[in-house]
Length: 343
Image (tube, rainbow, N blue to C red; front, top):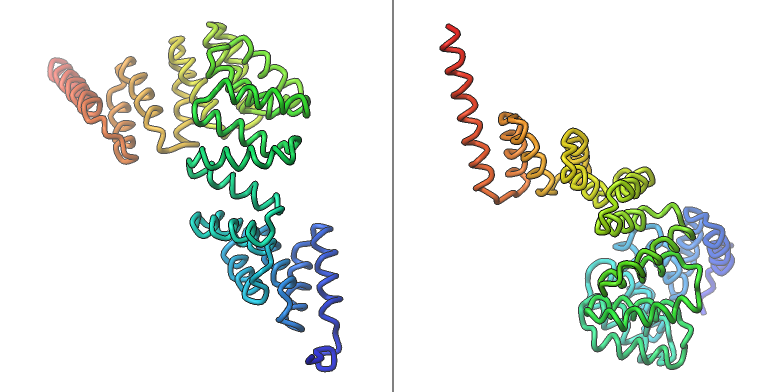
């Protein structure tokens, strides 16, 4: 075999080991440099390319990761792990057919490779192929009944299919394994809401917040539930807490704005709708409600400008836009008449 050490005086395996050590310590730039040096010294080792590809993906550079993993597969086309990792990158890039092909190739090469089986099931679920995905999830759970990721995604699959009772059963089983998982309690709260069991949902949301009080989504969800119970002041406080945690969270901002609007607190509602438009410029409901506030206060000029912005962002409610235009014309006419009478 050709001896690279005689040319460069360096051991590619040692550079590769340095790369692994740096990677494990989170020193990604150093790891990238060491992996690249190992490849330069010996470009014919699939694992060198594979590790670099995984690193590039972790660094948010999927296009480069794809090219690197393709080289790894060219060198070692029967490596199940590389096929799986390449499929993950393809899925990230939106090439779902290619991802499915390589997940299946990984499973063919190693039928007991659970990670690839889980990834394929997740991909099928993402594509709405629920029957195939459920079969795979259940098959995995037969062998690994404590596989929390699979049970969680099976529960989500049932929720997406509208099988809420089945989803609740899977989540309840999972919470027996991990009772302190705030996300699972929140998810079960959502499912209970869909089942029409608001009191059970409230318990789950409150349990979730006891475990993770800094979750803006759960505060918002609890706010919506309290609003349904007509406990508007408490709902407002939950929305506000959600926004204190994440001021850029559009759903909490929208819910707070609509609550204030329904309560007739137009001044605060106007502020919140404007903030919502800042965070989410294509939220057409925010423009419409903002326009309604201004119309109610006979601020037709401002309302008309708001609706022009809405049209620029894709609003197709021409009737509402024309109505404000007509009101603006009437207001301009009244102003003109008043000025003539004054003269």
